Length: 288
Image 1: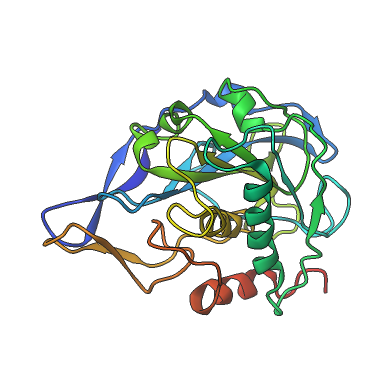
Image 2: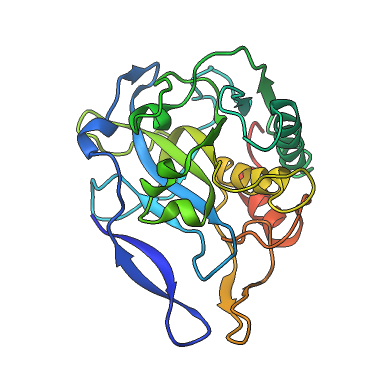
């Protein structure tokens, strides 16, 4: 199966090419039943470091059907039986650079930033850390974990470089973090659309951070900044903005600059403009 990534030509604007991702087989993606049926890995959205010419993109794993659907949570259809958006921070896979207390606090701030958007009422609820093993994707790719639902958005911790090479060739060198989406599927393995909105129904999402990079609290690479970006994916936001490179110095630039740009640029711990507009358009009617 081919997926689209972005690469540079001799021009100063990004062009597209196709490559095959290194991923688990489709047979192993279809897993056991939840309270609402079967679920499977659907896609991965990643952010890059901003060093070099690679930018983040989406890798699709589900090849059923002739097109890729958008995807979103279904109100009152969560595995926990509520319309509240829950999240969990797994401290079993800590960063080599920072303590679990520091990274958890940074992630909490990122989740609070999205929750504080006045246009939406997510009912954001943190599931307290209790030492349990988490990680559908880490288990699927051989890094230990669990196929069980824990929360709607799971910050599943820091994994070694090799894990990110399984997302795309050479991914360990430039993927800072990645958000995986798991969706519900019917008996034939096709995405369900229980609310009839034309979007695949999300079961939950998992976020992983690349421990090959040096992580910091308040400067590059800032945990809160990256967590805020990935939490945006966790809450159904896509990448936004067009990427360019300055030929003189090879630096990446985005227009417009936004939290949901596909590469890291600098510490950014607030959302506004296009990021807020995207969030509001998706969540304004949630739990109304």
